[in-house]
Length: 391
Image (tube, rainbow, N blue to C red; front, top):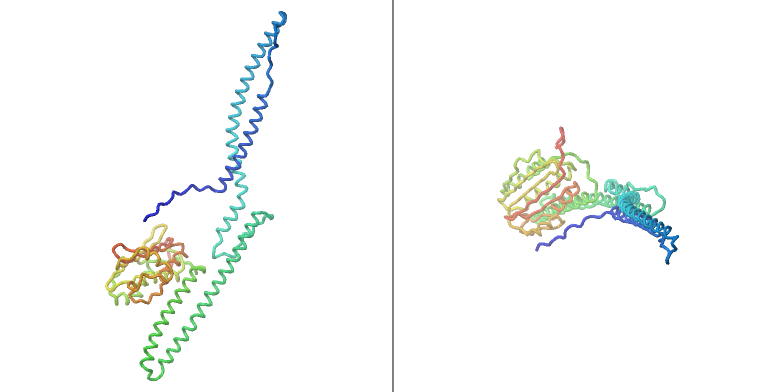
């Protein structure tokens, strides 16, 4: 069932709201001032003619007074009209001035917040040691900046602790595995070992290899999500694909898989960590080889434009549920034992691909092909090929 999305409402910034508020206040002040001016101007008293029958000698004087009152009334009418026109013009000018002054005042009030926002955006996992350090008197803006600095300090300590854990775990967790392997080698190296001992040793080595791959997946995922990327360089995804296919040529031949690579060598250049991007491409190719059926096919394409470098790997097979496919980018998510040809997958392969792509400002797109099989597409920022650029 498709859900109807509400139309996006227009974004109203704080500066726009402050501009409207300040502009309204300035405008209302001008309206009040003009209203008082008009009230004072129209509040003059009226002059009336005397009541009664005037004497004959006063008739000429009274007639003159009436004429003067008529002229005065005409003058007041003209002045009122001019005052109303002037008030309308003044209101129009005041409306424009109010908006300009309101925007100016709002900008001055919000300038410290814009400075804090810009400084916070510059701080990432690579430079958590930086602080805002706003040099202001003790006010609300200073309190906000100090709060953000405290949050950055706690984040820095947390990232450092995670980095130390990954480094220590890489050593501490591998030591028992090495000890187990050495013990197996010693047991098998004895003169005329029992057949059961050899079979048990082979089985334990297989399980240790699986644990080793699982541990390596954990560490790679942790380094990608919580650590800084090692030295970035310009790399061709096409070359990484060719190397991955060459390394798995025996497995591809053993399963009778047909590979269509369309000459991807020297294509789809991007910039990032060679180690992590190689692991990403290896996982995508491993996923296509292991989770395939005998005699199947693999189609690989590496393309790029001015903005994006793309790696697309498609495989044939049975039809999958699209909702289950979208969850494959999460750790320990599988489509079932019927998809895994060898059954030894750790469930971390595509989640590592998604983490590495995200660490390089890219993304992973997983789709179930309508005719059956899986489509894995990785998009990364494109990099121009420079003379002498490393492969």
